[in-house]
Length: 186
Image 1 (cartoon, rainbow, N blue to C red):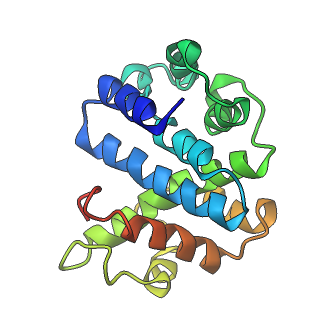
Image 2: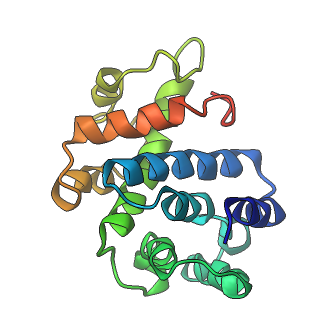
C-alpha cells in the first residue's frame, strides 16, 4: 500500500478535519520514531496515518474500532506489522493482543502524546507549535485537569517499552509535528 493510497482511504472515510489532522500528526510521529529505531518510515507512517481511519464509523462501537479498518484494507497489501500496530492501539476494546513490538508500542504511546502536544499548543497565545518546547509540555504533563482525556500512563510507557526517556520521546514527537505544522493547522 502506498502512502497516496493510504491517504485516499483516510479522506474517503474521515470527514472531520480535526481527526484528519490527528492522523497526520501521528503519521509524522511514527515516521520520526521509525528513523530513530532505524525502521521502515513508509510502513510506520502509514500505520500512524490510518490508525483512526474508521473512528467516525465506529465511535459508538469501540469494539469495532480498527476491525472495520481491517475490512477496508482487505484489498490492499499492507504489512502485517502495520496492521498489528493499528489493531494493538485499540486492544482494550477490540480483543487484540496488547502491543508487543517496537512499532506497536510506538503507535500506542505516540497516539496519546500527539493529543497532549496539540492541547499545549492551543493554550499558547499564538496557538502554534513553532515555539512550543519539551519543557513546557513536561510542565503540563502532571496537570491531570489539563487535557484530561489524554492517558499520561500510556505516554509514559515509552520509557519502559521503548527505552526512551519521556523528555526525549516528547522531543522526537514534537519536532515531527513541528515539521508538518502547516498541514495540521498549528
